[in-house]
Length: 194
Image (tube, rainbow, N blue to C red; front, top):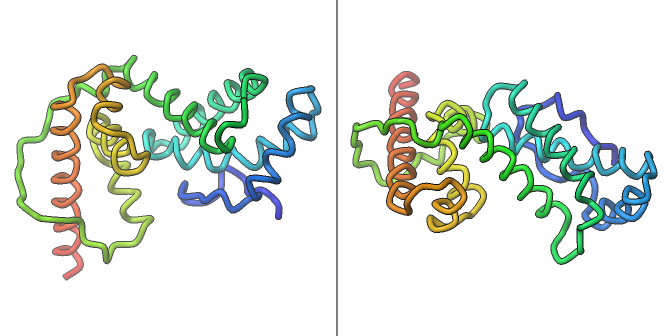
Protein backbone atom coordinates (compact mmCIF):
# COMPACT_ATOMS: atom_id res chain seq x y z
CA UNK A 1 0.00 0.00 0.00
CA UNK A 2 1.54 3.39 -0.92
CA UNK A 3 2.29 6.03 1.69
CA UNK A 4 0.15 9.13 1.61
CA UNK A 5 1.49 12.64 1.13
CA UNK A 6 1.95 14.36 4.51
CA UNK A 7 0.57 17.62 3.05
CA UNK A 8 -2.80 16.08 2.25
CA UNK A 9 -5.62 15.27 4.65
CA UNK A 10 -6.87 16.71 7.89
CA UNK A 11 -3.84 15.96 10.01
CA UNK A 12 -5.63 13.00 11.61
CA UNK A 13 -3.68 10.13 10.17
CA UNK A 14 -3.45 6.56 11.26
CA UNK A 15 -0.41 4.46 10.62
CA UNK A 16 -2.34 2.45 8.06
CA UNK A 17 0.35 3.12 5.51
CA UNK A 18 2.47 0.07 6.15
CA UNK A 19 2.42 -2.66 8.72
CA UNK A 20 5.00 -2.22 11.47
CA UNK A 21 6.89 -5.26 10.18
CA UNK A 22 7.11 -3.70 6.76
CA UNK A 23 8.31 -0.39 8.22
CA UNK A 24 10.94 -2.01 10.43
CA UNK A 25 12.41 -4.13 7.67
CA UNK A 26 13.75 -0.91 6.10
CA UNK A 27 15.73 0.09 9.21
CA UNK A 28 18.95 -1.87 8.48
CA UNK A 29 19.12 -0.47 4.95
CA UNK A 30 18.40 3.07 6.14
CA UNK A 31 21.19 2.81 8.72
CA UNK A 32 23.56 1.71 5.93
CA UNK A 33 22.59 4.80 3.90
CA UNK A 34 20.29 3.10 1.37
CA UNK A 35 18.24 5.99 -0.07
CA UNK A 36 15.31 3.72 -1.01
CA UNK A 37 15.05 2.37 2.53
CA UNK A 38 15.29 5.90 3.96
CA UNK A 39 12.57 7.11 1.59
CA UNK A 40 10.35 4.17 2.52
CA UNK A 41 10.70 5.02 6.22
CA UNK A 42 10.09 8.71 5.56
CA UNK A 43 7.02 7.99 3.42
CA UNK A 44 5.61 5.63 6.04
CA UNK A 45 6.28 7.72 9.16
CA UNK A 46 6.03 11.36 8.07
CA UNK A 47 2.20 11.51 7.75
CA UNK A 48 1.85 9.97 11.22
CA UNK A 49 4.35 12.45 12.68
CA UNK A 50 2.73 15.38 10.87
CA UNK A 51 -0.62 14.47 12.40
CA UNK A 52 0.99 14.34 15.83
CA UNK A 53 2.72 17.71 15.31
CA UNK A 54 -0.61 19.24 14.25
CA UNK A 55 -1.95 18.54 17.73
CA UNK A 56 0.66 20.92 19.14
CA UNK A 57 0.94 23.38 16.25
CA UNK A 58 -2.31 24.03 14.37
CA UNK A 59 -0.60 26.07 11.64
CA UNK A 60 0.39 23.83 8.71
CA UNK A 61 3.86 25.34 8.28
CA UNK A 62 4.72 25.02 11.97
CA UNK A 63 3.52 21.42 12.13
CA UNK A 64 5.43 20.57 8.96
CA UNK A 65 8.61 22.22 10.29
CA UNK A 66 8.40 20.07 13.41
CA UNK A 67 7.69 16.95 11.41
CA UNK A 68 10.74 17.60 9.24
CA UNK A 69 12.95 18.31 12.23
CA UNK A 70 11.70 15.11 13.88
CA UNK A 71 12.49 13.09 10.77
CA UNK A 72 15.98 14.60 10.60
CA UNK A 73 16.56 13.64 14.23
CA UNK A 74 15.08 10.19 13.53
CA UNK A 75 17.57 9.50 10.74
CA UNK A 76 20.48 10.94 12.72
CA UNK A 77 19.70 8.66 15.67
CA UNK A 78 18.42 5.63 13.79
CA UNK A 79 21.68 3.74 14.42
CA UNK A 80 20.86 3.85 18.17
CA UNK A 81 17.44 2.20 17.73
CA UNK A 82 17.51 -1.07 19.70
CA UNK A 83 14.16 -2.46 18.66
CA UNK A 84 12.83 -2.69 22.23
CA UNK A 85 9.57 -1.10 21.06
CA UNK A 86 8.08 -0.55 17.63
CA UNK A 87 9.80 2.23 15.69
CA UNK A 88 6.47 4.08 15.55
CA UNK A 89 6.63 4.69 19.31
CA UNK A 90 10.30 5.63 19.22
CA UNK A 91 9.77 8.29 16.56
CA UNK A 92 6.57 9.46 18.29
CA UNK A 93 8.57 10.23 21.43
CA UNK A 94 11.05 12.21 19.30
CA UNK A 95 8.21 14.22 17.77
CA UNK A 96 6.62 14.99 21.13
CA UNK A 97 9.99 16.06 22.54
CA UNK A 98 10.64 18.25 19.48
CA UNK A 99 7.28 19.99 19.91
CA UNK A 100 7.79 20.42 23.65
CA UNK A 101 11.26 21.93 23.18
CA UNK A 102 9.81 24.62 20.95
CA UNK A 103 6.91 25.30 23.28
CA UNK A 104 9.29 25.59 26.25
CA UNK A 105 11.54 28.00 24.33
CA UNK A 106 8.59 30.25 23.60
CA UNK A 107 7.10 29.88 27.10
CA UNK A 108 3.76 28.87 25.58
CA UNK A 109 3.23 26.45 28.46
CA UNK A 110 3.05 29.24 31.02
CA UNK A 111 0.29 31.34 29.43
CA UNK A 112 -2.37 32.67 31.80
CA UNK A 113 -5.29 30.42 32.67
CA UNK A 114 -8.90 31.02 31.76
CA UNK A 115 -11.04 31.55 34.85
CA UNK A 116 -14.41 30.43 33.52
CA UNK A 117 -15.91 27.36 35.18
CA UNK A 118 -18.59 25.35 33.39
CA UNK A 119 -19.45 22.31 35.49
CA UNK A 120 -20.12 19.95 32.56
CA UNK A 121 -19.19 16.32 33.17
CA UNK A 122 -17.85 15.22 29.80
CA UNK A 123 -17.32 16.23 26.22
CA UNK A 124 -20.24 15.51 23.90
CA UNK A 125 -19.30 12.45 21.89
CA UNK A 126 -21.63 13.35 19.03
CA UNK A 127 -19.02 15.63 17.49
CA UNK A 128 -16.89 14.23 14.72
CA UNK A 129 -13.17 13.77 15.08
CA UNK A 130 -12.22 16.55 12.64
CA UNK A 131 -14.31 19.07 14.58
CA UNK A 132 -12.79 17.98 17.88
CA UNK A 133 -9.30 18.24 16.40
CA UNK A 134 -10.04 21.81 15.30
CA UNK A 135 -11.24 22.64 18.80
CA UNK A 136 -8.14 21.10 20.39
CA UNK A 137 -5.95 23.03 17.95
CA UNK A 138 -7.70 26.25 18.93
CA UNK A 139 -6.88 25.80 22.63
CA UNK A 140 -4.33 28.23 24.07
CA UNK A 141 -0.86 26.69 23.72
CA UNK A 142 -0.43 25.74 27.39
CA UNK A 143 -3.82 24.06 27.57
CA UNK A 144 -3.31 22.33 24.21
CA UNK A 145 0.09 20.96 25.20
CA UNK A 146 -1.04 19.48 28.51
CA UNK A 147 -4.27 18.16 26.98
CA UNK A 148 -2.35 16.44 24.16
CA UNK A 149 0.20 14.92 26.50
CA UNK A 150 -2.36 13.64 28.97
CA UNK A 151 -5.44 12.75 26.91
CA UNK A 152 -3.80 11.72 23.64
CA UNK A 153 -0.21 10.68 24.38
CA UNK A 154 -1.07 9.03 27.71
CA UNK A 155 1.48 10.85 29.88
CA UNK A 156 0.90 11.01 33.63
CA UNK A 157 0.81 14.39 35.38
CA UNK A 158 4.23 13.58 36.87
CA UNK A 159 5.66 12.94 33.39
CA UNK A 160 4.06 16.12 32.04
CA UNK A 161 5.43 18.15 34.93
CA UNK A 162 8.93 16.79 34.38
CA UNK A 163 8.78 17.25 30.59
CA UNK A 164 7.52 20.82 30.77
CA UNK A 165 9.29 22.02 33.89
CA UNK A 166 6.03 22.75 35.72
CA UNK A 167 4.45 21.35 38.87
CA UNK A 168 2.01 18.45 38.83
CA UNK A 169 -0.62 20.83 40.19
CA UNK A 170 -0.09 23.15 37.22
CA UNK A 171 -0.45 20.18 34.86
CA UNK A 172 -3.71 19.13 36.52
CA UNK A 173 -5.00 22.69 36.51
CA UNK A 174 -4.17 23.22 32.82
CA UNK A 175 -5.82 19.91 31.90
CA UNK A 176 -8.94 20.84 33.86
CA UNK A 177 -9.10 24.25 32.26
CA UNK A 178 -8.49 22.77 28.81
CA UNK A 179 -11.45 20.45 29.32
CA UNK A 180 -13.58 23.36 30.50
CA UNK A 181 -12.53 25.41 27.48
CA UNK A 182 -13.42 22.51 25.14
CA UNK A 183 -16.76 21.98 26.89
CA UNK A 184 -17.61 25.66 26.48
CA UNK A 185 -16.68 25.53 22.80
CA UNK A 186 -18.84 22.42 22.30
CA UNK A 187 -21.80 24.03 24.06
CA UNK A 188 -21.39 27.07 21.80
CA UNK A 189 -21.25 24.84 18.72
CA UNK A 190 -24.42 23.02 19.83
CA UNK A 191 -26.28 26.26 20.51
CA UNK A 192 -25.19 27.67 17.13
CA UNK A 193 -26.50 24.53 15.40
CA UNK A 194 -29.67 24.20 17.45
